[in-house]
Image (cartoon, rainbow, N blue to C red; front, top):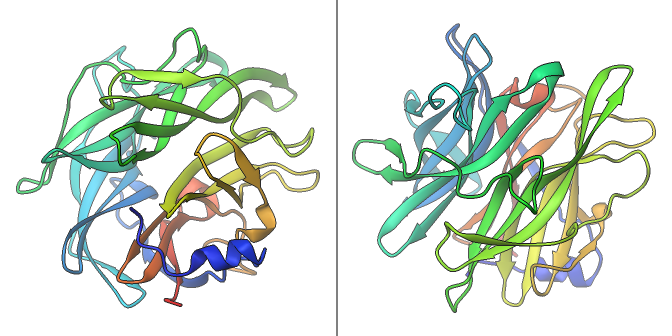
Length: 321
């Protein structure tokens, strides 16, 4: 169960969540790797956490790094240099052009990192399906369980299936919210992907039953994509933050919010998201890829800004009520 701190009050009062930005906590440096995107967190003990995030090499192939971090009193501090833990797969595999960190899940004494495998296609198109790796805490390594995806293209998902949020219910049902491709659209700027958030369930986290239809409808004719939903459950309510694009005048990602009582049918109200681009700086052009978690009454949001994580990742918090 997610450790709530009165956040249901904001929802019941239709009050935007008062996220307070705390600035960058990882800024890319060095020549070997750029970016710092798709951060996610796992609680180890006391105030010690493990943070996974994604960096790109000179060929723009994504790799997953791990770093210990201290999380306390509204601050997240990374320890030392991040460790490279997962590389792209072999030629032709679903993850041959990159691996992207998604979400840690602990189950029956084992901790997994779900990740998205990236494969490039002609004309700037791509495929991104979902893999799973086992975490070794002592060695800070990730080992892929299977050479192929655990959730990917099939009769329900003809283009791709990129899972980004997971939850295990009290009766052992695995739930995931994932981006599934709807179509590629040819434009004057090139091929544009249309994709949205879908829902699936599983008994073991490996074999998934996908439910038809979008969890969230597109807002209008200008919106065409959702980026990395993050789902938390407080009592009987699911809270989801996500990135979405675009609007009539803005093509870059902005943050949205929805709530649900069953995880399948959602009430969208982006005005409650409570966080937007800054006037200037690292997240002034774009805000995306949230990961929300709680610790000792505080709520934390790790997120990306300009350039899909090119400027690194930062932190926003909700203080205890």
